[in-house]
Each structure stands twice: as structure tokens, then as C-alpha cells.
Image 1 (cartoon, rainbow, N blue to C red):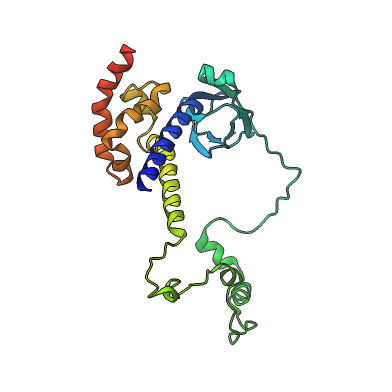
Image 2 (cartoon, one colour):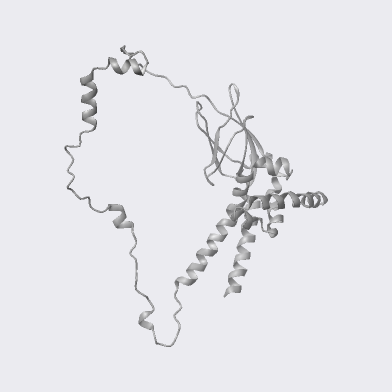
Length: 268
């Protein structure tokens, strides 16, 4: 049984790796308006919920696949949605123009007051009886019945699971055979799903942690080889080191292995 689970685990990992390489691509975009570049614009892939921001040059990079929708928003600009097409993925670059959002007020009323903006002076000009009445209304708890005991929270009473303190195998004691509970296989299945989810999320987490400049500028890894490079380094345990928070070891491995990796892809 354990061998079968391990074989399935390896098979799912390889399938996820192939799927990530074929479907997820990194594209570079530039956000502009009528005056020029747009800094710090928020870019979110609505399908994967992955997000990023445009830098000081209005440029951003993000993982996409064909059919995904990018949502772009920025202060003082009208939000815009862009659908990723096959042509965009093939070019790996795109320019996006957004428009300014102009806010207009129908009318406003300007009232005069006797305040000059200095707290020490303004507090003296406010009538004492008015200050006392405002404070009294705010601090008045006379209408609250302190003797009422509130019932249990409605949501908690419905959601809180019942704790079963009874041993389900107790009535079988002494029968002479072991009991195989059906939830044991379910626990293994959930553990397998959890591991697969971590494997799938690792490329996005490590890119978010170390940054795009580290991989594409410092290590000089081609954008289309990003997933392949992580697989190349994965046998050295970079996922486990990242999971344990040992980023220094991860960086050390990536910097060391990038030399042999770049030589290998040049030969190909």
C-alpha cells in the first residue's frame, strides 16, 4: 500500500510540474496613461489570485495562461480588465493604457465658524454647557440593563463541532481482530493533497520571497526556463529549506547551481 501511494505521489508531482510549465507563463507589462508611466499600480490575476505592482518604470511581471483576466487598479485611475490572449503569451510583452478618473461634486455648502485652528484657543470659545451636554450623552449608560445575561453566540452554537469522547472501537475489545478505521486512508489522501498543493504553490512563493530581480537579473535565468530551473535544483532540497525558513541555504544552492544550469541550456 505504501509503495502504491509513493508511486502516485511521484506521478502527481511530475504531472503538476508539466502542467505548470505548459500553462503558466511569465509576461512583462507596462502601464501608461496620458501623462506617461503609472507607478505602483495594482495588478491581479483574477483566476489564480496572484498579484503584483508596477515599479518606478511602470513595468510589472506576472504568471498568466491563455484566457486569464488581469485586473488593473490605481489611485486616480479607472480600473481596467485585460483578457490574456494567445498573442500576448507568444510576445511575452504588453502595453496597457488606463484613463484618469475625474471626480466632480454637484454642490457643496461652505459654513462660517468662529474657530481659528488653535486647540488651546478654540476649546475656550466652545460654551461649557455644550461640552458638558455632549460628554453626558456619550457617557450615559443609564438605559442599559446590566442584569441581562446574553445567550450563547448563534454562530458558535451552530458551528462548534460536537466532541466525541467515546472510543469507537471499545465495543469490539476482546474480539481478537484489529479494526481498520476508514478515515485512515482519508487522512493519507488529505496529506497527499496537502503536499501536492505545496508543490504547486512553491514556484510562486519563492519568486515572491526572493523577487524577480534575483532570478532574472542576478541569476540571469531566462523567463521561460524559470520552472525548469527550479526542477533542476529541487533534488538538492530547496523546497524543504524554504519550508523550514532557511532562505540562506536556498539562495546558496540557487547561486551555485545556476552556473552549471546556464551552461547546460546553452549546449541545448
